[in-house]
Image 1 (cartoon, each protein chain N blue to C red):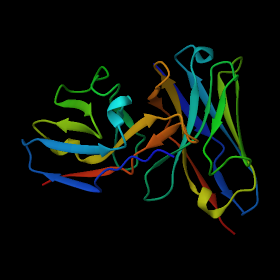
Image 2 (image 1 turned 180 degrees about the vertical axis):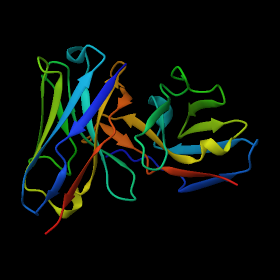
Image 3 (image 1 turned 120 degrees about the vertical axis):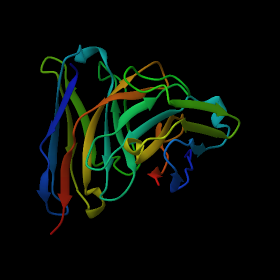
Image 4 (image 1 turned 90 degrees about the vertical axis):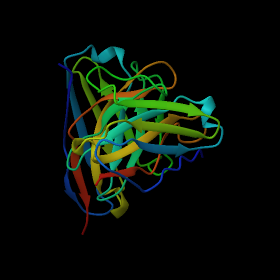
Length: 108
Length: 120
C-alpha cells in the first residue's frame, strides 16, 4: 500500500517560517490534503488539493506538491499554530485513504 | 452549521461488539460520502472505512476488513459502524468525517469523536 512519510517533529521560532514535508512515491501526481490537530480536539482541514485553503484558514498556511514531496508551509508562525499536522491522499491500492504519520510542530 | 456527533463508544471486552453512530446535521447528508477515521491513544490518524452517498461503494482498511461494517440511513441523517470481534488494537477515538471533493476526497468536517476501549 502507499506510504506517506512525515518528520516526527519540526521546531520553529515565533515569526519564522515552518515547513512540514510529506514524502511519497510520485506524490506530485496525487492531490494532497493537510490537517491540523490540537490536543484533545478533532482534526481541522487546513489545505486541500495541494494548495487550496478552506475559508477561515489564515493565508499564512500554504501548500505545494511536486515530485516525491509535498510541503505545508506556515509563515509568520504563532504560538497557536503548535499542533500535530497530517498529510493525506487517496490511492488506488488496497487502502484508498492514506494518512502520513503526523508531524508535531513546536513553537519555541 | 455542519455538525457531526458520534456516539456509542465505551468499554468492551476483546471479542465483543459495539455499534457506533454519527448524527449529521446542517447539510444534505444524502449528497455526501462519509468516513470513519480512528486514532489510538498517542498515535496518528488511521482511516477505517468509506461509504458513498448512496451506499453503493464501500471500502475498508485491511486492519478491519471482515470485522467492521459501515452503513448509513439517509432518511435519519445517520452513519454507523458495526464493530465485531474487537481486539485490543481497536482501542481508539473514532471520528466520523465528511468527504468532499471529486475522486481524491478530503475530509472537510469531523465530529468530536467517541472513545472505544477494548480491554478485559
